[in-house]
Image (cartoon, rainbow, N blue to C red; front, side, top):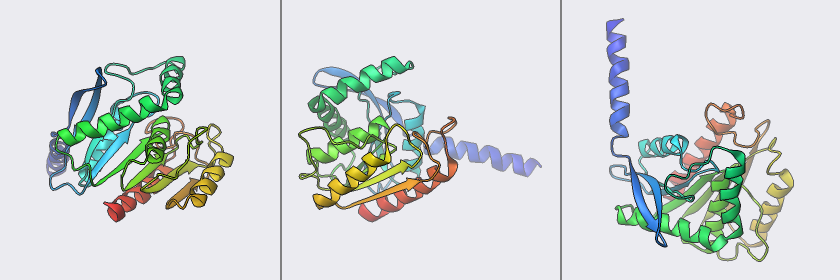
Length: 245
């Protein structure tokens, strides 16, 4: 019993030490303050830009960043709302995401600013992938359409519609989409429309849906969480990272 307890405690200590290099980073984009989270992996296999959902950068994104660091990747979890802006009310979440949906140039500038910050911190951003959840998934597709030369772009239960006047003709990396078939916020019609658009533009892509999975199916501890879909999408994503980075 004592041996098992010692092993358990040692495991906790090792887990804490694995995340000891992670830290919150204060940075600016166009003169405005933002706060992201950066964790560098030893002998990093590549860099990942991680974009938050409409809650802003929270412990969820930090946990995912740490999980990726354990796999050998350096990660910068961006902040697209501003330092200290972490909305908890739905109306506030809609306000902050809505402002960026209406100002796509600002969204792109914030994404670029996050990548530039990571580069200054020592991340090898020339060998990188962007990934995001919900709102963050939509932001990652915005980055893909901007022509940013990343190796790949992954959206987890993210917005899939293409804004009027935009297209994927400049996209330079492979796109991965992980979607819940039971998602009523982002419909299967939108999923199919994106697949058709990517194919028409010759963009390499894989798009997977998971039966019974609603919107936000990867969010630990929520009523929407679906373990099967979460584990399968994570496994697919890690294989994708190994292939492109």
